[in-house]
Amino acid sequence: MSQPKKLIIGITGGIGSGKTAATNIFQQLGIDVVDADIVARDIVKVGSPVLDLIVKQFGKGIILADGSLNRAMLRQQIFSDNAQKLALNAIMHPAIRAELLAQLDAATSDYVLLSAPLLFENGLEKYVDKVIVVDVDESVQMRRASDRDGVEPSQIEAIINSQLSRHERKNKADFIIDNSGSLLMLNEQVKAAHIWAKNLII
Ligand code: ATP
Figure 1 (cartoon, protein in one colour):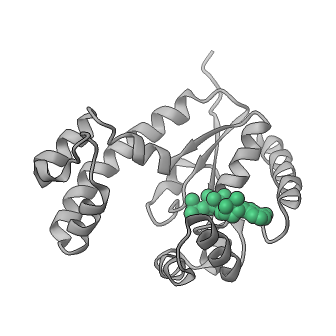
Figure 2 (cartoon, rainbow, N blue to C red; figure 1 turned 45 degrees about the vertical axis):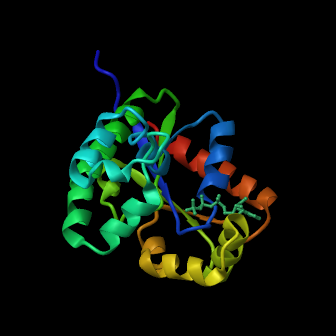
């Protein structure tokens, strides 16, 4: 008999909204989490085929002395050159997608979460059945993310402005986790989301 289709739930939210804090709790509840940011980092590891492709495109100067990718230089190069940005996306996007799908396929928990800050912006919602949005207002995002990263709130504000608006994101949600309260309150909300998700499984 063929395997029933696995339920895949996307979890997204703006910078500093608490996706990682939330997915850590889901993991404690036994749910597998595939993290798009971690995949994007891991596929350019030293010795990876994707890193070789980046070197072919950008030259050996894009590699640091320890053999790893010079992310700051890469960011700078694509910032000032749109053709290079498109070339990088053409290398990265299919590789990220393939790895995400492989990890989602390998998941064994009752349902699996795909955590991606840019779930909608990068067209990843087509791989998920439902979407959870972790929501806080912009002032909380700025405070928590600037405390976490040790940067000025204005830097966080620029990133918030480059992402989907809070309103648009919430409109696309099937379940909203309000993370404006304490971590204890987040814990309760994640448990409620977990029950909701398990009830979706037939
Ligand atoms: P990014 O998209 O930037 O990776 P994120 O959505 O994963 O961010 P987190 O890293 O989980 O956000 O949370 C941002 C910061 O806020 C972290 O330092 C986290 O510990 C803290 N935080 C998250 N939720 C709460 C909360 N309810 N109360 C207090 N601090 C919180």
